[in-house]
Image 1 (cartoon, rainbow, N blue to C red):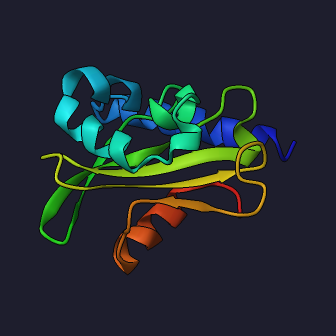
Image 2 (image 1 turned 180 degrees about the horizontal axis):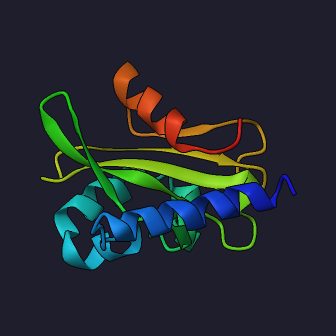
Length: 136
């Protein structure tokens, strides 16, 4: 049941996003907002660039949110590894204008020694990223 809970949460959040009119998903950032996606792709460590759910945000997705941080608007959300969501998630903050991007990977499959931070987020951004992930 513990492994199923994050998946259930993703489904509920996805339904709520649809009700609210949110129809943009992380994997669409590459096509719809290439400058923003480019900022994210630059901060992802090289060792994760062949892992689509981390590098291209092509995994189990929830709709993208937007948040204001330090006077900038950011795309905000998380993606998890398909069929392995419970222990494999990446949260992202990507400036809409492509000026900055940050990520936080928490993964039993790819980061066994602990969380991996992408970019250099300040404390506020770090807290947002940590709050996006569903497992401790």
